[in-house]
Amino acid sequence: MKNFLSSIFILLAFCIACPDIVYADNPAPQTVQLRKKLKQKNEQKGIRIPSRFIVCIISAEGIQMDVDAEDIQLYEIWDADGELCIASYTEESDFINALFSLEGEYQIQFTTEDYTYIGYVTI
Image 1 (cartoon, rainbow, N blue to C red):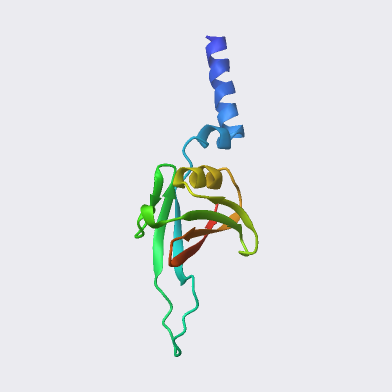
Image 2 (cartoon, one colour):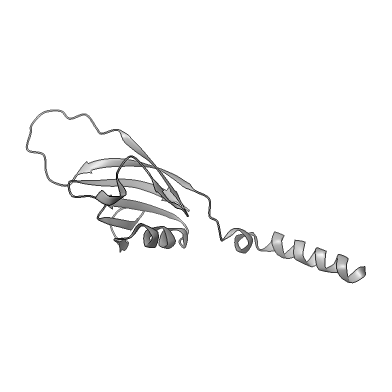
């Protein structure tokens, strides 16, 4: 009985001391607000209304948003300032695996033929 109780206490202490190891298999989904940006310069003059935010949910199962996954050519991870591209992927699954292996604040960019969708995520 002593060994059984000792084993339970050791297991509980390990779970409390290392919570990242216990929950690393299923990271929490990230909700990101993306801004749609035209890749080419707009030649029209006048005041333009900013585009609306596009809600994007990134989870271990995939990316859910109002843009077809087939249209996305590149999934990129940039530093928080958007100055340095850390990683670039053509496959959604590779992007998700890389993103959830990082910690900190990052800018993500999804590139289609005409637009780039830009948002910020903190992991």
